[in-house]
Length: 284
Image 1 (tube, one colour):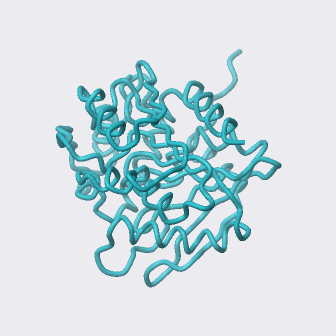
Image 2 (cartoon, helix red, strand yellow; image 1 turned 30 degrees about the vertical axis):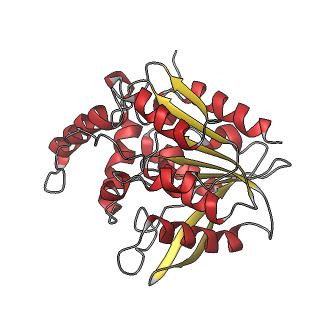
């Protein structure tokens, strides 16, 4: 007999319970950080995508929390974190993270940095601001590369309820995040619904800029990029994305995960986690 599938809320509650919660100043409130695990390896800092939260890393955290601390905050204005004061720039958001890390990590502790989508752009800025401590920088389908804007059109869900809202989330996940519709399960839908309800900061205009390219010209840490083959914001221009990264960092280690979409860490966790494991282990 097959084992019963754990319900999404049970999975999320279990992950929440296992985390250490830390709050640091952000705007008129607090930024919320969660930390799982500990061990001899340097910490791994994971920055989620736009209209997201730590939950974007639900299938990454357990794979790394066995031998290191895994840190996954809710970025300012997203998830449970307060919004920044005024209209922040990418550098402003990175500065909030850098200040918070002073309370999350021991002084001068080095860490590996990973950013997904909007979080990839913020990770680039944080890497430039905290260069003395970042061992490696991994960008996962990052925003901030300029060029052709994404043509993805999303359904509006704000006024929808019940099954209609869930079906709109399913449509949006397939158009933007997950290439294989069979991989859009109840957990992905629950995460998408929670994230969109709490998203306040407008990340898409920032992601359309070339802000990441501008800052990467000043970043010297080992640089890696991971894309799903059918990453919706980039498809069919992955070669252009690679060329833009190589123009400022010819040494970038560029990977494409076949058959996967934008949210590659969720859709292809085994492949993604193996790639990321190789990257962070090589930094030792």
